[in-house]
Each structure stands twice: as structure tokens, then as C-alpha cells.
Amino acid sequence: MRIVRFDHAGTVRTGVLVPGRPAPAHSDPAAGDATMIQPVVSLVDTTPTGPPVPLAEVRLLAPVVPRVVVGMAHNTGAADRLRPPSAFFKPAGSVIGPHDAIEVPGGVGRVDAEAELAAVIGRRARDLDPATALDAVLGWTCANDVTARDLQANDDCWTRAKGYDTFTPLGPWVRTDPAFDPDDVLVSLDDVGATSAGLARSAGEVLAYVTSFVTLEAGDVVLLGAPGPSRALLDGEVVRVQVAGLGTLRNPVRARRRVVTR
Image 1 (cartoon, one colour):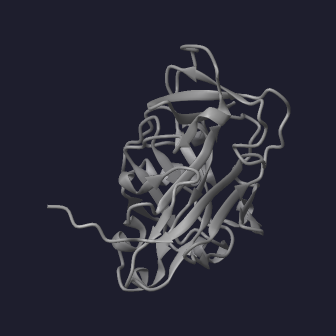
Image 2: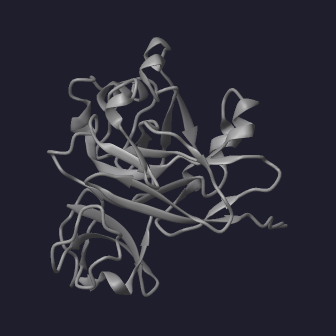
């Protein structure tokens, strides 16, 4: 099942994709003009609430509106296994959806994209056990952990480096699939990929660690870490995050224009 949030004629709803014809799992959300969206009650209650609407008539949004977004630090390779686990928070307001623009602030130096797999929580989760932690996961989505690299080098907490508006693209949907293995899946940034099997800690270990200090609720998001290389973002390009079996998250990149509000 692929769960989406969408704007249809000015009304935001949650829905489930109902393909009119088979489409490859790696395809763009807009692929297949016969695809429909069945509106449902919520992320965790997929009871239909009305007639389906064509995907071509809607704008896909970030698939969830999390209270909490957590990322894992130093989880990118076997050497990080020697370090104690460490995490950081990203503001919920930094979340954007597919095709929304990543805005690169001026004067911050290099800004990188990092392709990651993200877990979307399906129920209240606290003090999870690594062996059963995935039971608390509703599904999985693609994530881009955008990072101001020069700021990161000068801030041990990574607050500014990870926290700018638009720095957490998610999507294009949440896929629920009991057979999906988060610990052995190809995660790609554009055409460069690496398997999540190379991460220092498994998804279950990550979720157990995170829920040891914060209670997660349905819709909260945990980024598992980037198994592959990052790269600098360039104004005017489109960056792609792909997770095998999930889909492709595309976002244009543009220079941020400073807006002063009073």
C-alpha cells in the first residue's frame, strides 16, 4: 500500500494510491495517467471516505506531518559501530514534499544532499526492543537529509546545519510492505547508490536507541543515515533520492531569497 497526502482543489487529504495499470516501483509519482487516489480517514486508518480522484489532478505533499523528526549521526559505515550511537533533531517545519523546492541559503557555504531511508512510525513507541522495534513502523519513505556542511563543521549540535526550512524533503509516499527489508535495500542519490546493509546500526537498533529518550507517535519520522556519498546542491538543478522498492523523491534546488517579516 502507498499512502499519500495530497491537495485536491484546495483541500488537503490523505489517500491510498490505486493503480489503474501496473507501474514500476521506482517510477515517478506522476507516472501512469490511469493512477487514482482513494481518499481515506488518516495515515493509520485507511477506511475510504469518498470517491477516488485522478492522480493527475492533485498535488502531492509530504506524506506525513510529523511532530518529531530524528536523524542518526555517525551511522554511515562499519567504523561508526565503534562510536556510541548519536542522534539529532530536525525541525518539523523543515519538511517538504515531492517536487517542492529545496532553498539554499546564501552565505552558509556548501550545502549537501544525503539520500536516506526513513521510518514512519505507526503507533506510540517508547523503549522499543531492537528485535521487535519494526512492529512500531507503519511504513517507509525516501528522505533527503539536506545539510549545510560548512556550518556542520562548526556546530557540534548541527542545529543550523540540519534545520533550515526545506532541509527535510520526504516522499513521494509511505509504503507499507511487511516484506520490505530496511537493512538490505539500495539507497541512491541521483544515480549513485549504496545498500543500507553498510550502515553501522540496523533499523531496529536505531529505533530502540531513539525511543530510549523520546516517545514517538504515529506519523513521526526517523532517518536511518546515509549509506552512500553526499554531494553539493546547485541552484537550478533537480536532485533525486531513490530507494529500491519505494520510489523516487525529486526536488528542484534554488537559491533562497530572504524575506523580512514584521
